[in-house]
Every structure is written in structure tokens, then in C-alpha cells.
Length: 320
Image (tube, rainbow, N blue to C red; front, side):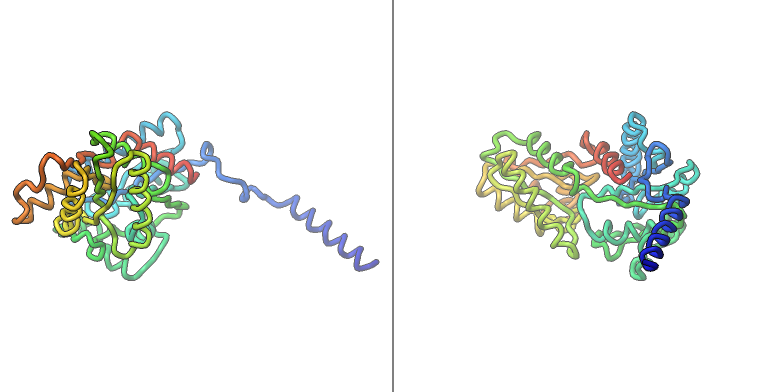
């Protein structure tokens, strides 16, 4: 009996204590009351045109946000190369009064940049090997930007230091946008799908082939299923360095079995035509025109797609 009475007394004490506690910490965040900042992070490039295009893209996202008012402030930054750096973007969001930051990496698919470098630069992950790739912003601006794009020699901005909570979202392989981009490009280039094949040019990342291969197979399957093309393949080209070795043989092989080959680039700010011209201009054996009228190179890039800004905003909203 005494043991039962003690149990009742203990239970009553727990109820009293619980009633007096502030349990608001367990409530989900309300995007309308909390000042949440959106940080759009792209790879970055030595070209001033890259920064111009990215900032124009950021303005599209801001315009969409103005209609929905999901985020208190928005900034766009580069993972490497030129300003604005992540630290500069976070400082701007802090000055605007943001209380939390959601980072959307505008990268096509997972790789060493998004899995390791982005978290490290945002200050939520540390690795000695990544720290060695970081330079001060002053040194970075003076760097000659000789970047191999193999991810082992990249020069990153310094890590962010902030007390604000940070959430990093997924890349473009989630949310359905990448599939839509691919299907739209095929539809724009195609004349007769049943007689055509598709080759996707993709950067690739040797350390993450196990992640990338299933994604590329999915896109190829979607192209055949939805657009009814005869075949779809992909070639890893980096940003043109491996184009002649990997893409050219694939294009020639597809041209032998189908009447037309549609070449589509899966790059944020470069088109298939850009990659082709960049690669062949520096390869003395490939300066002459490679292909005839049966090869069609897409001139589109992902940032220019009408749904790209919507994808960024929706990805961030899903993380609120």
C-alpha cells in the first residue's frame, strides 16, 4: 500500500513539474513569425559572367519570394572562386535580422562539393583535408584560378562563423526538377523521337560514381519512357576536359544506330554547345567540325530553365 501511495505521489509530482515547464521548444518553427534567411550557393567560376548570371538568377528567386513572403532575406554566394563568399552572404543575412539560415546548394547532383565542401564552408562540418583547400578571401581574389575541376585542387572560401542555426538542403536530383529539365530539352530539340537518341553530358565525380550512376540511369530511362527516344546514354566530361575522350566516341556510336543524336548538358550555367566548343577549341585534333546535321547540341543551361528558381524556393520552403 505504501509503495502504491509513493508511486501516486511521484506521478503527481511529475504532472506538477510538467505543468510548470515551458514546452515551447518542442513546437515546430513558424516561418511567418521566425525570420528565416535563404542562402543560394553555387559553385562559382573565374568568369565575371558567371557571377552576373547567378545574381540575376537570385533576383528571380527574390521575386518569387516576394509573392509568397516565405523568407525574410535572400543572398546568393559562391562556394569557391569569386565573391560574394558564404561568409559575406551570411553576414548580409545577419544584418537583415535573420534568426535561421537555410542553404540551397544549386548543384546538379550529390558529389564531394555538396557532401563535404558545402557543410565545411558553412561551418557545420570539419575536415583537416578540406581546411587545407581553404584560402583567405584576400588570397582567393589574387589566385590565378587554375582549377582542374577534379575537386582535389579546388580553392574554397573560408568557413562561416555564425551563431545562427543552419540547414542545408538537397541538390537537384530531388524534387522532380531535373527530370522536367531533361524532358523539356528533348522536346525542344527533337524532330522524330523514334529515330533519335540522347546523350547527356555530365560533370561526374569519381568518388561518388555509386551515387551518380543510378541517377543517370533514371534520367536515361525517363527519356526513353516519356519522350520515346530510341536510346539514351551519358558521358562524364567534367567541364570539357574529358569531352573528347568520353563524349565524342559516345556521340559517334549513337550516330551509327539512330538518325539524329540530341546532346544535352546537365550543367548549372553551361550548355552542351558550350562544353563542345570549349573542348574542341583546345584540342588541336578536333578543331574542325566534328559532326554533321544529324547531331544537335542543346544551347540551354539549367539556370535558364523557367522552373529553376521555383525549385530553389520550394526546396528551401520544404526545410522550414
